[in-house]
Image (cartoon, rainbow, N blue to C red; front, side, top):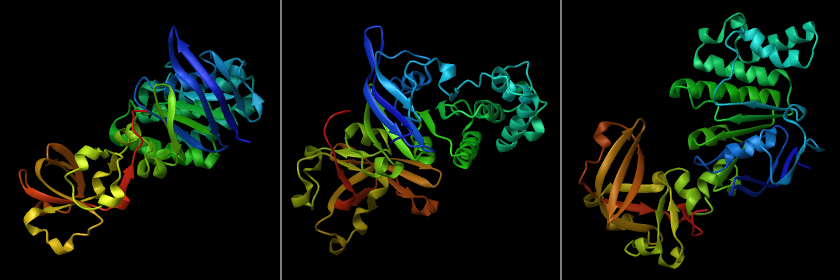
Length: 348
């Protein structure tokens, strides 16, 4: 039986239904990410689990215990918000110790636990510092240590790294993932950042309009999107409709009548004049177009190729400037059918 079970969770704001009878199971020690655009219901679901928001219907079980009607402080659930919510007049030590004091732990137990948490998050030398003396990344680690100190059965994290600079954000989330694995901490993590979800998670739960539209490993949701919404939301997929594919050559028997999702890095691009007919495989899809735009994204060159009025995104590795194809260049595109994912129609 799953460690955390959500059964038929529904929530409304006035007359608007935000969550539609959601069912979700999370295993012990798992890091599951709720991923979706703003307003899809992911933060609302987190607050329902924590007890901060009421539910119109549904049941929540944690470690085989029904917690649906319990007060937040009785649920043994920790929560870390986007705002660090540290006490500015307390030191790092005092902030981490706060929950333990509320639980009336002994002075010796508090000292042992605070020192352990400070070591785990790498702040043992800043115990006497105040929040204003710390960087954003350090403050976030204090907030995490404070939640961990009371040994919750479940950790909920609501976009905790979104206020950090890009470089610090990568460092902090890497440290967080190490800590989560080291402690075997069951975690539900909320983000709208696809890269963050794919990097951190054991499983990704993609949400739209208060519903779960796909649930699976990062590899599964990236390589096998189930519908058009997921494909457009994850990985900059090209979505080609049957009408748009009409002018592409090859693969007629296998193409069918469904739209196809195609990753930008799965498309082979070459100058049209350099493409030899003998190199073309009949079962692949082929077409010609011209480069409308190019963008250098570090180690990736992203081309926008116009194909009969349809923009197609193509990603290639950036070897050197000599390998760039200039804007306006006529090009040949080739796609292996194995890299084409048939889609269900619809947005969710």
